[in-house]
Length: 87
Image (cartoon, rainbow, N blue to C red; front, side):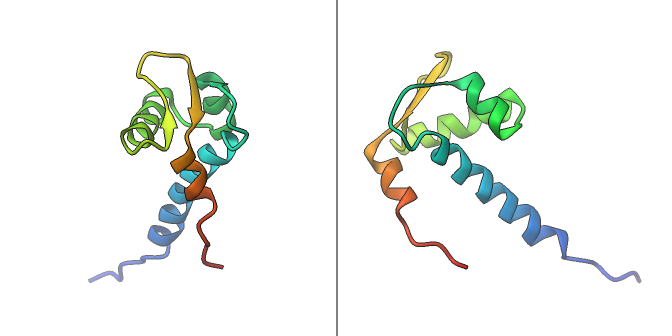
């Protein structure tokens, strides 16, 4: 039997977290941002970005209504950005 390499799992997971953090970082200034701006900066397909934005909105981290073309961070989202990170 071949050996299973698990090297790519943690790297892939870390990239996912960095993408989520990156979206909130783009919104840190508390201004409205076009969804297209985030899509271009994060390099995610629109359907995946919409899923993430809906998730963030469900937890009141951002102000986003599906079908609208802009998004803004909310105070709970700013609190997430201030959480300590592992090095």
